Image (tube, rainbow over all chains, first blue to last red; front, side, top):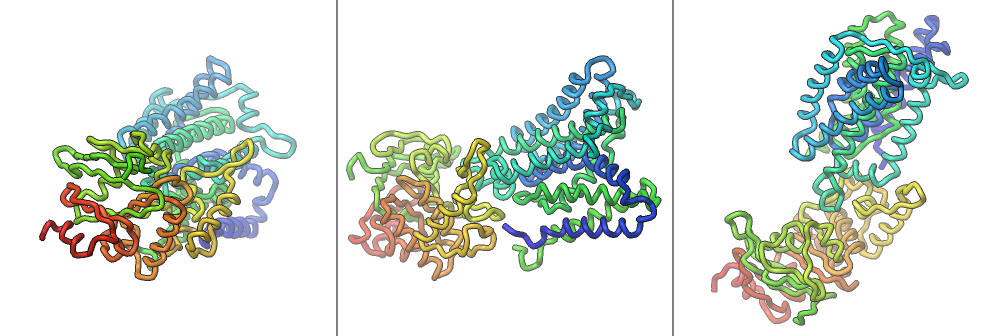
Length: 311
Length: 245
């Protein structure tokens, strides 16, 4: 069960946090406002990362999550112009789950690799997000929506933290303590063995893709709440950040192995890193480079197969 | 054999498109008995095993369990009748602990939330491994870390635990060394002593004569004959396999 490479993410988080805490002490890195900000900014990534742990563990991938974030955010904001917030949230969720169902059907019914299916839907969904509002951003005014999904606090704790904690808790339980979680791992580990053992491999694959579509929709709604509106650029870097978070957390891209708590810490690393680099004065493009470099570093450390294990 | 034998295969035929993989096989297997299936490559051994395991649906003929005709649409149906298979390619999930492989697809749960009962699964696995003398230090060990013989031991433990009637084994020792083969053969005997019927495919005639009570020979999809191990010789079986006499 214990993999010696797994603690890497916790050590990395501690080191990166300590590094910024020391170097950026005078820039307010450790201030309450800044730490709360980090939590707010990481929540949508954490929500998606938890779902993507399931997707990767099942041996699949979902490249469409970034586009789904944008389309769900826009659908939510757009519907809220004329309808209730409840209906708007349902619309946003429906978009994500709908894309997940399409992905799942293509992968299971036509036996296509999820890499290609979600690459295609990523394009379609991104195009839809751009066209439905003609590249315009849409503002949201419902104060109860903004409180629930964005700026609201419960005592001293930002409301968004509860979204992150709730997702991680449910994800941790389902992944590690239910038959579904076990079947996800078995499917990604050895689909043939899982199938002859009576596990409905297709149902598992379908399930994880719907899950990630739904999680991306929730992330889109959370972005809409925090930004008090939506535009097609929401979720632009989500795919890179989420994959980096999940891989940093020790989940294998090849299936059969994953960690929800690891993904949470991976997401926190990405959040702390972005925050620290902003405080350092790096531009958005420089941050992107830093994120890419970190992802490279992460996969070199966690996914490299020792030579004697190559078979 | 009586028509009430534990598992009876009657005129089972399997075609893949225009190719006839198995012309027709008729065979009884009884509780506490090891029957070996021998023949050259392409003789139809694996095809027959897969028909009984529910992997293939026979084109013609039928399978009877205690005299009752059964139809398997999938391995799940076969398992419902107490028939388990140990596959040649070791159908184990490498990155999961040993006990999860024993309970793959049939995990134990507890409580209203249907939590996985890892403690119970590990304990049951430990008991099984002890009974079969499969030497693995802990059922929680990752399956990838096991030797070939230990892995086969896990597959056998799974079959013993879930089978009520018949265990099908396709080349269970093909990938193993001498000592590991001896150990797995001992585990197979223990399964028989626990009242299971065992149908084993093997390329090794030495092994067949060491283990089997009866030997069924297939040649190019046709059943050539069945012999009691005690009443035949290696030469006769070889002649039946090759068709040379």
